[in-house]
Amino acid sequence: MKTNQKKAYIFAISAVLLWSTVAVSFKIALRYVDFLHLLLFASFTALIIYLIIALIDKTFKQLFKITKKDILTSALIGFLNPFLYYVVLFKAYSLLPAQIAQPLNYLWPVVLVLLSAPLLGEKLKLISVVSLLVGFVGVYVISTQGDLFGFKVNEPLGVLLAAGSSVIWALSWIFNQKDKRNEQTKLFWNFLFGFFYIFISVVLFSELKLPEIKGIVAVIYVGFFEMGITFFLWMKALHLTERNDNISNLIFLSPFSALIFIHFILKEEIYYTTLIGLVLIVAGIFIQRIRFKSKK
Image (cartoon, rainbow, N blue to C red; front, side, top):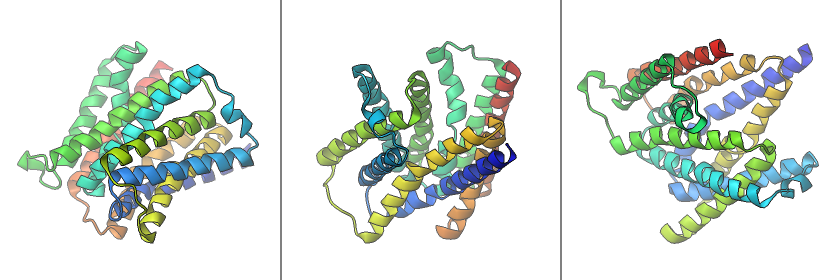
């Protein structure tokens, strides 16, 4: 059991470190391609990875054992995530510094609480309202970009998109929880439909073209580590661990370690408001986790 727990930590820490690099990879990729092409090539890369993993695990045939209802479900969830979620997120990254877009996107666990009331029939408790308020104060603090008392939101469209992406993610998470298929099958079909949607969008609203070699490397990195293999590392960690909370708490390291990569690779000067706002958002998530633990 101890050996499995050590393996679980190795898989989890690897996933957290890789996820910590994706904000940097988004900004680098966006130097060479627009946000639509970034999603097009990254989602195609993720699809290839899912197929390879299925072949290695000998679960390839299971991917295609689905019903018409499953196809319709993936058509809906695939529209939300990866298509709409990443279109909104990548557009936000094209407008904002990475240190602003990344923590705002991290708001989704707090938003999930708000959406769970109407969609899952859960009561909105006082502690949930407190967590929401703390999280949204964090959003405001981050959006001031170093001018906390100027009471001005810099680049409001980018802030709205980054924060809005967390709403889309939370929605897709709720619908995904209702889908009882295994995660590997859901991911493959959701991304297959998502790729179809983004392909049509590129044809209609952009010009289909290959980026230069640096751009290709960047978009493949995004597809491989943001959308692809990292998720399976995280699932493997959760499967091996003795207690899920031992592993799930590690995810809170990701937005803070991401700031290190953002500072040293992208050369962004980290605003003090970014750190304060991120602490507030994470605090809001922890407040919500206290609620779930007490409920359990």
